[in-house]
Image 1 (cartoon, helix red, strand yellow):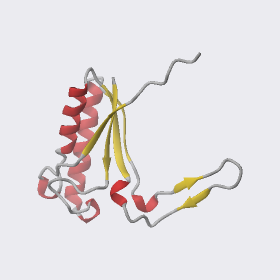
Image 2 (cartoon, rainbow, N blue to C red):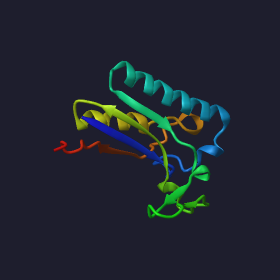
Image 3 (cartoon, one colour):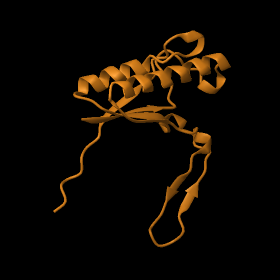
Image 4 (cartoon, one colour):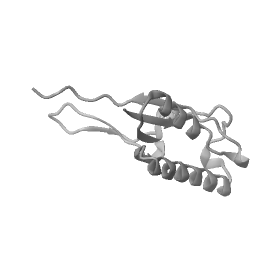
Length: 132
């Protein structure tokens, strides 16, 4: 079963300091943690994909009606907590395993190396209906 584990720019349970305000060594430790987690999941054959995304300040919101030029909004966006920060797509045997991985990701280090308790959304990836 495939699951998407989603992180946003929302405050974490144990850290409300935005990552751009962290000390450089804390940012480096956080990124190293993410890289190591990805390597562990890949070695276990569970990682399908994982990406960090550019910040909300670089986001574009696009809408269109299919006939005229698209409408593009480039911010600022007041609710940055609703923007995705990154994701993992994992292929695991159970929902429980997806939750275990999300809990591990949630414990990523923040300022001073302390776990930040990041909120990770776990959603099963649904398969499309069979083509007729």
